Length: 349
Image (cartoon, rainbow, N blue to C red):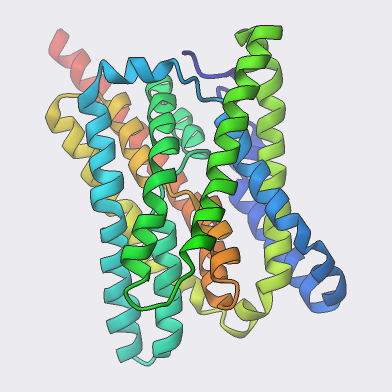
């Protein structure tokens, strides 16, 4: 399947997404400070915004492509291994090092705050990205069809694995409501997946796949972006007082998250390169292992951990860190692709 045209020419709005997020954070903090009553009334917008962030990504999944994925079990196996056997535990370990040991020992966080930030870090690690990862793949000139197949696998697998990993990793030191976790996963993953598949099938039946890719998906991507920005405003209006009181938690979260991204991206990239894949496939698989499903993490934090505001704030900080870091990784991937092409050209002469 060819990637839709809207991602082939990302405009300056998409490329400056990190800037818009920062502006939305400022607007949200201002709302929370000067219009607290209005901010509380906007709370209903959070589940709507989160749903509209995830649903458009699901419309890009064609279940028929799962058959194609079965023809390349090695690629899928690599993704499954890193996403579900490495990533959650890697972020758990980084959280233990920084939030349970190093930062409390240095007096940078209290023991309680450290555990809350650690919980937010784990929530960011339990589920791989299923939306923005297609943008990073496209910007890096990766393998688009492979990326969509991998996204389909991740969308289905994480519905089953997310509650398990939260119970295993977070439940070891914080009492959690597994029923609430399950409801969040079904509402923000299961339902969007079902509706996305139905939407795709019906639109293709009534129109065409070309119409879906070139007409509908660009609007869906715009809705996704606007939903992200709106949700950021509401969340910071509701939770921003915690960041105002503790602005240092941004760099405290940035250290383990950035370390995780750079370690994992390079680990997956060089592993797949050693296996024999080209630079486009290596970049695609690396992004699909590195990107995090911060929409789901935020949704779970706001529902299952509603009584612990610091957990929600730590997950909200996630995309603020992830977006600029992923743009750096895009540049690294493009540089490597150029190097591979130059080397290939030299060997052919």
